[in-house]
Length: 120
Image (cartoon, rainbow, N blue to C red; front, top):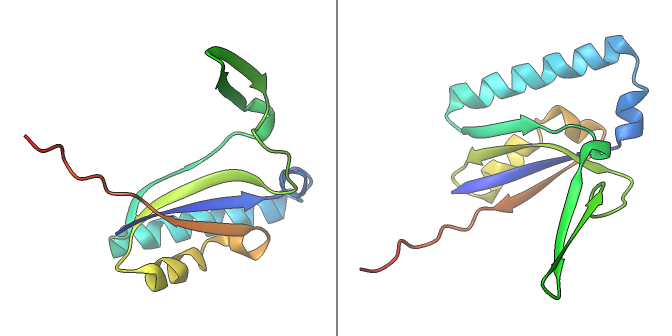
């Protein structure tokens, strides 16, 4: 089963992190990513630019409203994700627990919906 592991962190903390700590965290992410590639759990993953670069689109009454910034103002922001294959939620939780960002932020785990192919 596929799971999306969304990584939420406080961007302000990341911006003010000492460079040595930042290099350690990036090294930990590279090690984690390599480990889930080797185990066969990795499907995809990306880091995201800061929320200041986000654009939100809404359609209301047939009109498009485009605003700068994320859709929600929160203390922690979506900073990246991994899309993984796991046998079950327990395995997904075990993998998410190893993501370096879990030490300072949080990881949201959501199963991916599998749509049935159209009937012909």
